[in-house]
Image 1 (cartoon, rainbow, N blue to C red):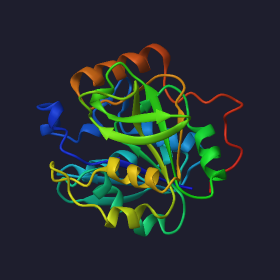
Image 2 (tube, rainbow, N blue to C red):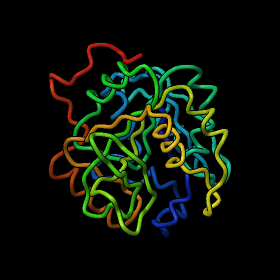
Image 3 (cartoon, rainbow, N blue to C red):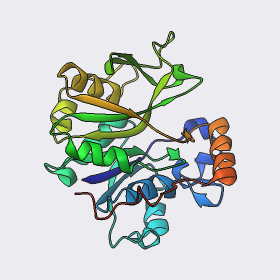
Image 4 (cartoon, one colour):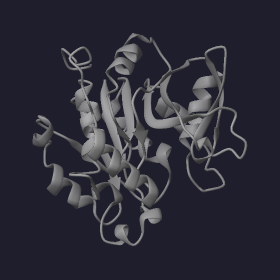
Length: 253
């Protein structure tokens, strides 16, 4: 299994901080924000990683991460997203990298207390389709929110005014290689972006979407409030915890 970290965008909700640097290079407690999603992939045994970035500060990622030695990696791949086309548009740039393999996609501002080892193992056993990690939250209207019945996701609505559950779709997604064919069928939303929620609903419609609920805390860090929350959570309890039973014994492939 390959891993993709999406770290583009303008970070407009964090202006003026992001006028001089990419959002994902801002500190969260004692590390740059981008360290946390990369470590999430590495902890799950995923070593073949692509970073998608954009904007005027893309070169700073190369200076910070180099070839990934801080994570025990020998190499990190990079690609560049021009403009603001949305999550699915950024993911589209990874087609050459993913080829025909399964992939774990994580947004660059997503930080978790624990790990995704169990979800990786579960998706490896899933013949085709997609798998989402959900988390119960107080404000599901801020996120993609699933309607769930009989252990199945019926549909996902993006930022609903009247959420049909208390769950949010976290920024951690698992896809098979048909993800790129699905992206090719997308049309821009009213925001002018290719929406990842539309892709997820395609998997739901074909009956190949599964999900699990993430244990431990989860937060994004894309606003001042969530950035402060992320910093406090990491300082208080730590992030990317890997128990001995969860530790991968080999690289996820």
